[in-house]
Length: 93
Image (cartoon, rainbow, N blue to C red; front, side):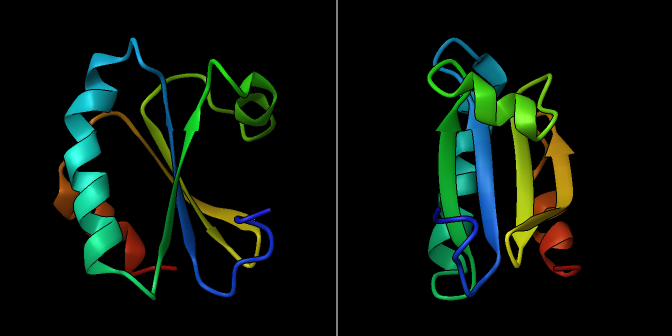
């Protein structure tokens, strides 16, 4: 619901507790949430707890970050990428 009804873009971090790269990217995701407060909503989705949602969006490998605008996925990043790459994706949503 947070994603579908948001007036601002949303970045969802698809992760799991056992995923090492997910832990590597977590600080960058947190920093973006703070830096873009009010302009970007950031959420986390544990793929083990919500496998149906992960499947719905075609998430096969994690970490995966999906950027939503107007309730629809518009960008996707897979892997523990540098924070700068995530910021570049934000320029296009």
